[in-house]
Length: 310
Image (cartoon, rainbow, N blue to C red; front, side):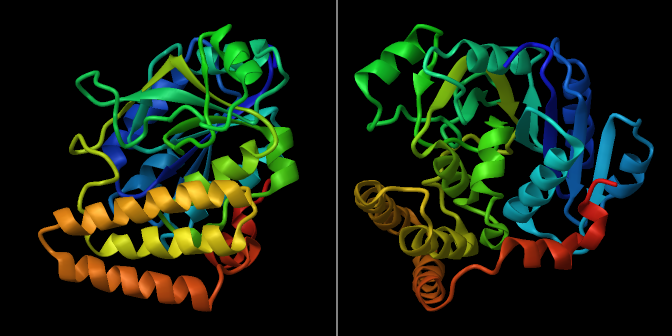
């Protein structure tokens, strides 16, 4: 990918008006400009829609009728980005503020990787005080070959098997081949399923030279007590293990064992174990008894033809 290739940024937002404006300003300040910004407004109620209507032509806005979560929002945004035409799609949350060189570093790593175009290149995610954010730290792939590790190291990167939607550059060709995120995941594990689906059989990189600030309220990891949202963690993981082709059978065993250990640890540390146990039971039940709805059906309900390029 050359520096003049087309990149469309996709930002999903819900009730973070001021942070969203900061993200848009940071996107406009990139040393390597994006060609367009697609903002998916998940039915915000804080004046976001009105502010987005006042943005320039570089920002394309889609407003969902209901909150579709991160999964649905990114599915809407990626579909529109592809229809607008691009070589790569840069995904990020509405509380993710990229440093000015963030995109340039992603594109450079993508273009210089010796083994061909990687499906995904992920940024280094830091918190507001500069520490690496444990919620979004891509872990080196335990399945990478020595050749892949050496090739990544030659350009200052690390091979990864998954990455967070907080800031990843996705190859448009891989997206067209592998499809959209599963919108019915709503939240949690949507990025894990999607990034592993894109990367399977190809390459994923973590690029430390691309830095973004994830402005979460607190500094913590996914082991933090999730409360009622634990339901989505469990249900979506069950969907991944039983219905997704993003992981090989061996990987499902490895990552499945890791998830089970994390669930036990999360419940044990919780101050409200009853809520988590109920979420666990409901998540297993719903994950086993029914699968996710077709993404196109979810998107049709949420945005209809509004979320298509004309």
